[in-house]
Image (cartoon, rainbow, N blue to C red):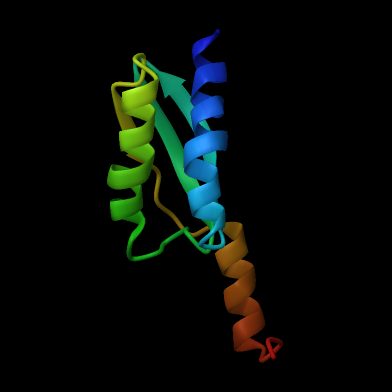
Length: 95
């Protein structure tokens, strides 16, 4: 099995269900030299607990289950979903 297939299998079975339970998801950005770069989306983007999620969920599951993954890096930033939500909130469009 190719390394990206292994990564996505772990994400789909161990990481994504947890994140989706909190209204979020994960997007893989890059995997180079043993380092997986990703971002959290939806309600998980910019969540105060995102560092906990990265260390205790994403890093733990991927480094334990995919030997090629040596490190994970969360790419922080405001997601498009969060910007759209904020605009709707400011326009009083949420009810």
